[in-house]
Structures are given as C-alpha cells and as structure tokens.
Image (cartoon, rainbow, N blue to C red):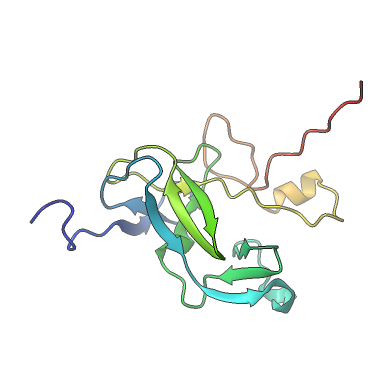
Length: 158
C-alpha cells in the first residue's frame, strides 16, 4: 500500500492544542493544493434565528453574503479547522462553494488552519468588547488576540 492509497485519510479530526477539536493533515499537501471543501446546508443569513447565531458556531458566508453554509447540517471535517493568525491554509470560493487550499507545503500530522477574518456588521463599530466576543487562542507570535479581521487601515488625506 502506498502513502497515497485510498486507505490513507487526507484529513484527521482529533484534539487540538489550539482549541478543542482540530483537523490534521493525513498526508502531505503541496502549496496551493486543494485540501478539503467546507460543506453544509446552504441557508439565507436572514433565516438563521438569533439564538443560533452563537459566537462558537461559524456560518461561512458565500457569494454576496446573503447566503451562508451551515456546517451543523451535512457538514464535514472542515468545520473543525481552527483559526490561527499564522495559517497554513487559505480559502478559495468558487461558484458558491468554499474550498480550503494549502498556503504552503504541509507535512503529515500538521494541524490545518486558516485565518477566519470574521467581520462585524457594517453598522456596528468595532470595540474591545466585540473583539473579546471572538478571542483567539492560536499562540502565534503575530496573534491579534481576536478572530476578527484586522482593523481596516484608514487612509490619511494628504
């Protein structure tokens, strides 16, 4: 049996030092290689009841942001991929589907991660309290301390 046989799982879910469960490479991935698709039920963002809008549950926004992927229904291992401020994966959206790709070469056994870049509503100002609702535990040297996207740089007028 070779290392790339169908018996070798591409990803493995197990306990993570970053946060709860995590997803680990079951084999080598080359830079830019597709690792896994983020799957789940497609629903309108507006149809999600407020009580399900839980800060520990991430719905993946697709397209124009009116639709999201709910990984709690028909989701796969990708729902357990953790955030880090120093990721080894990135997201690529294609025709309403979300794919996770290797940002660099990844070794077997390495935990997979991407930067969640969570966004706040446009009409909600970013505050320390909002940042604290999505704390980051990645431990990277460049950790922002939050899963939120980096603050937008304000261009200075000349």
